[in-house]
Length: 395
Image 1 (cartoon, helix red, strand yellow):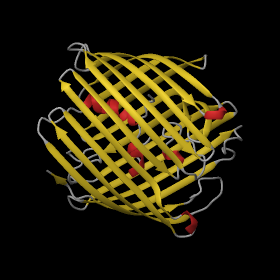
Image 2: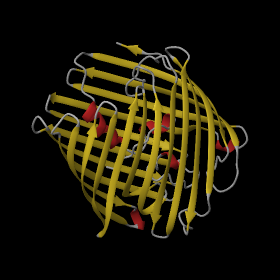
Image 3: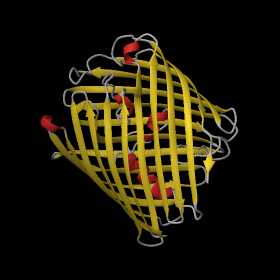
Image 4: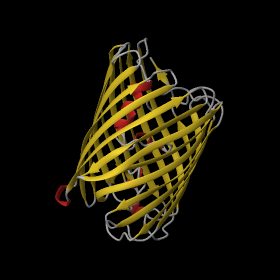
């Protein structure tokens, strides 16, 4: 499925578009712990947000927002299985535009079951539900803004991985999604097969085949088939991947590419990425050819930083994340260019209290695009300060 490398957005984006990509990553890097453990971690986050464009359109409509985010994570670990369930929601109260106040501004619920019956074989299944009043949060690859509207996503994913030899691994992924929005619905059904070979501990050669079927209902549908090959290299500090291939979208050929280059400096990491592919976006019932670039810098403490899927006590030391990127989205009727800026600073106040400040800016320029609500340029900036309380309760 679409490889999207950026997930540094507040609360919602941790589980945005690709439940499938999370499944593939966890299959490659996560193995069930040899012990038996259960973890329950509730959390509550209170935030104040200043948003200079609450409707996400071409006009200037600023407001201050009070956001409360309760959530819970449940993790069950067995010697050959890991079960994870996560749910949280955002309740928002607007000071100026009180009609936008809602107890369900965002909802996220996911469940994954990972099984490894033998050291050579693993499989995973997952389901997810995501709901938001800002569809840009689900358009993670294109960053297209279609204004404030309710968008819901239901997803089902599966993964099977088999080690064919000491150096060769075969993996199959499946994803089905349904997006519901104000002007219609989109259904996606697709699978991907990947064969990788590691001649050394640092290098890997791989080939991929990806097929996606997208149905826009009465508006139409399309099928995309892609075949690509790539090479990856990683040592203690430097890592990079290069991949290229060809694809057809309803019979029309195009070239695809993806590459990343990163370097670690102690507990700091800087990574740049580029990609070209065909995708869709919520509110846009047509194929989109997207070229995207991102540069991200992160600084973390000496130990692992807790997440909803891997909870724990907050380690000492501040965290910093910076991300800047752009995407050029080519539609049949024009072009939409999106620019993104994300800055996050976090400081633990105790093992269960975390203070987070975020600056989030987006800009969208449209060229010749006057349909699907994309007419005109859109600028949106948000600043938030939040305090998260998450007691840790392993058993």
